Length: 306
Image 1 (cartoon, rainbow, N blue to C red):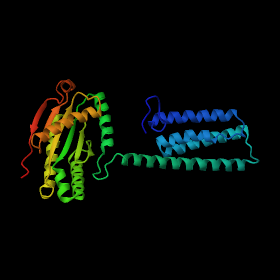
Image 2 (spheres, rainbow, N blue to C red):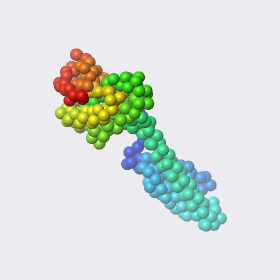
Image 3 (tube, one colour):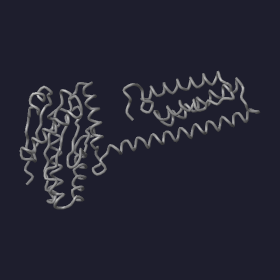
Image 4 (cartoon, rainbow, N blue to C red):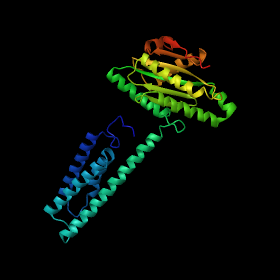
């Protein structure tokens, strides 16, 4: 879940704020419990603190807060009295309450695990097992913000599969899917673990290279081209090449959309240059405003695929 700009989101808190909020909620529940009659049950108020800790910090902290809540209620029951005829009935009731708290903690942490898994799955392209457009754009927005804070540069690549439509037309969409799946796997295997690969749709892929300069990105691109060539060469029915645009961002773009628009233009320049081509440029927003595409700093053709 996204954090609301107007305040905290209790479903997405860092550990320390979550624990602080849970502790304050627990103290508030105990204070209210202290001033009310023991005939009124405030177990639900304690549960808010327990579930907040469970959701944000995990099962261990959830159980810890359940123990703290139970301890507070037992202490007040012993000091102020309780509505049970014997202590054994009182402790039995508290044991049942603790069991209920633990069940709630377990179910909450399982729900959080399921939520996170579905959240990740919703941002993965099921065919290629890389980020889909939504997941990739979220990572890109995060990287732009992070690099804006630390002042480092990063690179962004846009990869288009040339002549992919011909594969679909001649051999069917199932063969086209196998090609895209292979491209996704080869691309993921050819970049660094810190890099992020995404499929933007159709036969278009993109790669984020964090804290990387232009020369480093071009070196990774050369490795990727070699791997893709090795994949397609023994399969003449995969008669495709790859047009690649690589943008280096020393100045941060205003948004993920602005970054993608810039590198997209570089990729299309590569396609218009004869395909199977890489064009790289450094992003400059003043040049973008004046010329619309930036200044291409380097052009490289890959080795002959023949």
